[in-house]
Image (cartoon, rainbow, N blue to C red; front, side, top):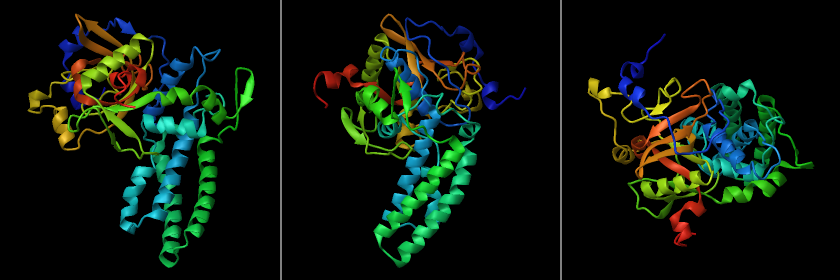
Length: 380
């Protein structure tokens, strides 16, 4: 069996001593396997929605990841063409712009935006295909088409500043892209059958999901910015709309998460992948800062404050908090639902210690009723 550097420096005593019990826990969650899709943010969002809607809908439903992924791709291409039309770029800059807009990465803000704009359908209506799990191959294929389109747009811009003509051309190109994406992912359904009626995906979202999603606030915890204020930021994924992230002190966020879990609500979060690069192979399902003892080779993990200072704290992965273990008013560990399949981690879950939380977790989606700033009417 192949060993990597993480395997060589794992703290086996810690693995044997980890307490896997939780006194606050939401059970019976579905363990998805995102494989190579990079759609962790969608899988976490859909699992959260399923949990929220189980009391509203008559039967448990599986929502289509592929449907959201399709329109994520479509929306990014649409924004990319607008950017090329409206802004001035040198040809040598284009490849860097493509990196931002031709990918499957996203966050909770994107998840919320896509559902509110395009609605959602059932998994049975638009099932995952093998193409969903090979995003890098799809990226390269799309670039072939998109770069040709960009070249046409830039040549017209050079000789003619008629924006009406450019946007008309863009619509034609986007129609072509819709067909291409349909060939890759399948054609999006135009209706959804639920509770004995047939409605459009957008109508379904308006009836059951939009108000729910609006109650969720995007939260960050960054020590380099003043707390209790909102900031418009981009975390290495393009924003579909201007999203204001409320920056809160980490202990207040933990209190809100615990309140959510106590009342049966899963909590979506994003974290840095520093020291998590072996998590896909981690059969122990442990996210502890001292799980790997790299001090033996003279390396010590960066503190979050230093990582923030040098812009090294990237948002790399999204998961769900499903439980917490509290002893004598002290948080010992968190239970985390991953999307790497039941065969990975600890039957699909991680156990995260509170120190790992402090140093690596900094992006959240929390219902505003659990935030003290909202309950005190300080932030609206």
